Amino acid sequence: MSLQTFITKHLYKRTIVSLLLYPLSLPYALIARIRRKQQSNVGWETDIPIISVGNIVSGGTGKTPFTIFLAKYLQEQGKKVAVSHRGYKGEFENILTIISTRDKILPEADIAGDEAQLLANSLVGIPVIAGRNRKNAIRMLLKSFPDLDYIILDDSFQHFKVKHTLDFVLFKTESSYGNGFVLPAGILREPLSAISDADCLVFTGKGDLPKFALSAEKPIIQGNYQIKRFYSMEGDDIEFSELKDNRVALLSAIGNPISFERTIMDAKLSFFKHYVFPDHYAFNKIAEINNILDDLSINDIKYVVTTEKDFTKLQNYLELPLAVTEIAFVPNDSETFSNLISSTLTNSKHE
Image 1 (cartoon, rainbow, N blue to C red):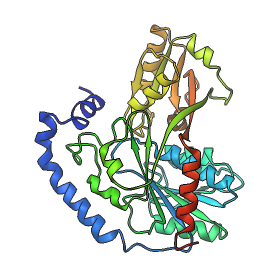
Image 2 (cartoon, rainbow, N blue to C red; image 1 turned 180 degrees about the vertical axis):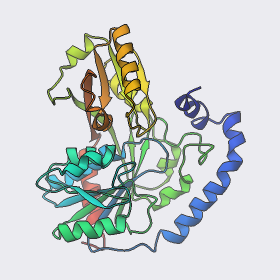
Image 3 (cartoon, rainbow, N blue to C red; image 1 turned 60 degrees about the horizontal axis):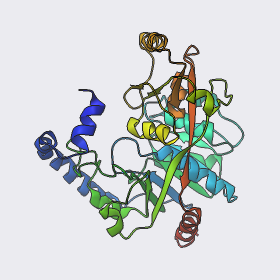
Image 4 (cartoon, helix red, strand yellow; image 1 turned 30 degrees about the vertical axis):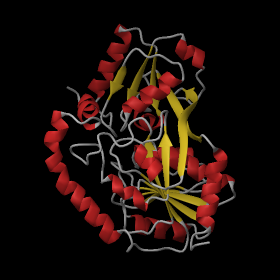
């Protein structure tokens, strides 16, 4: 049984296996509760609004695409924005480094980690810094760009050393919180009660909102990740008809590969198979790429559809016939989103 199959079978449903694992999750849940209660109100406070984008579930909920959407939205409102990312599994996770400025993407972006690099590539004119020390990241950004209006922290809901002006907490509507258990018995990083510290819940995907969301008395934004285009390694558009008329496969190393499959299927594109790798996989083994190429040839697969996050690690394998999927978050109700941002930040102590 693959890891993804195990997760889907036991961590999204209450089974004998997840019930057996439940006792192991109790200390984890207790520590998370204590940590949030003791530290959530003692963080360092800066002079400008700090917006956090995070979640309480393990795996992908689309934090980075939402961060891109949010940063672009604020930029379109004439605000000066910067983004801080931990740089997970990148060269600068422990060494704070600015990887893009308002003028250009710096060479350091190429080794900053897949999500940090994606942010730098996607946010033209918006500075991006990589590194896990968020307090010093904010200081470095403010020193380099003293006129900033906002700083967005990608994946920061569990980071208490810096006070947040606004906390977005993201969920997938279809799976929301799995079987309701904390790791390792479920997919929750901390108990569901943590959403009491959220300012806004964001749900993506189809389906009805879960009961906990309706009873949380929090503003709710619903939206979807929609495909803007497919493009080649060279950046040229690939027509949808070209993909639809040929046999394609998917390739991903993301937190929620099933969500990627749904996005592709929602676009009415069928695929022959899905090469699934662990989240943030490095793709540094030539033999694995050669095995994929052999499989493509045997099965007459013309295109390999992948994510922009994975493309940051696959772009040097020129022999792969990649079709990169550019995805953007689109709110169901843009006016509700705009009103929430405006009212929350206007009423904050920073304004």
